[in-house]
Length: 363
Length: 123
Image 1 (cartoon, each protein chain N blue to C red):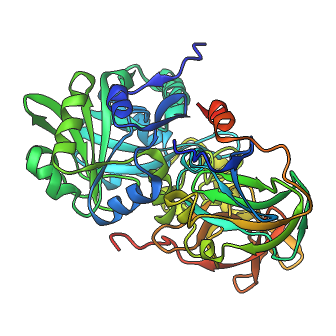
Image 2: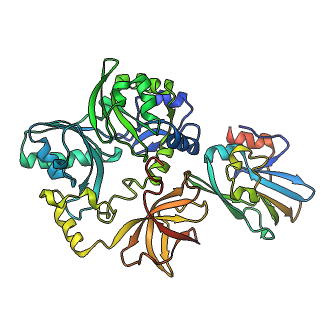
Image 3: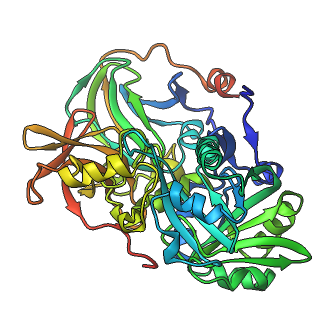
């Protein structure tokens, strides 16, 4: 094993901008440039660019590619078509926990880009190869993470600002996918993101990543780090693998039953998940809000009266709302009207269940 | 980093200004920069007695929680109530509007670092 941290093709640019760097999923990535709160605000009001090159990209192509992915993942590719993206889950075949949550970019009839979380790329390729070997050899599975950078341009002005420097990349529809040539550079762009704002994610060949990054900054897009990306996705109640999803947590517990299409036929992990659906999940993810600014953090116990009722999976101060918010796994036996409190290092802070997303899309 | 010469410091990245038997306490510029944007500060109860090194407050950023220790033994005579709604004062003005608490000291101040000694710790 090589324990050295991987770095982005934009590493020198981040350092030149004075970014604070930190380890994330085996990569050394920018956490913040000027500050989390300011970068968060820029994304809610204007446009920011995140370097998310640490995400994996796995190319899956061949006449049997559709069949393989349809079998491996929970969502139904039959409900979309080439030129569209879909959020989906890879489940453990034993207990149906979410091994990874990913986005599939469907390029054309026989080719897909699958985007796993940074640290789960090997788990994904192993799972796909295992199924491919069992079924057919008519499919190629290639980890192409090294060949490209991924830039996410997000915010209400993301497309306007992007249009000024790369109109070819700004036209993609929400959850659309297209290949586009920018300055003779072949890119792939999708109308996806992880902030609760409009925006796009662009895969650009590694050798041209700096050129695109510099063009975005020239267009007035503010660089933002993974710190702000985390507070933004929490306000949008988007799950983070290792927190809302992971070992012991199924899609049904995570409140993501819409990601699972039991009507499509068999898929990896279907058996144990169906059994859980029949008996009802023992706990479910819920949004909770606390009065005051103190962040209820991951790992904090949620109390219902005198008894432990759940655990916070992600929590922080919401910069948009001005108070603490959290996603928590709450025992199904706890009534919706029961009064909750979060145990923050020994202090019980009253909490309320609230609708998610905490901050409505495009608010 | 700004480390004013007229203040005294602790190895836990707090500054202390001694004024006629009292000590005003805050966190250093180095500390606020390391923490990042501060979003919440818990303050001690005015009137409470504290011993040197005792954890008396918490400062939270979006990423982490840090404890604030009483630099000296004494009684809390005032806390900076403005931090409840404006914790960002710790980032913007750590040696001024971002002060945390005022202690009436039990005895003469001992064991603090001067600015040069603190600078050598963080540079």
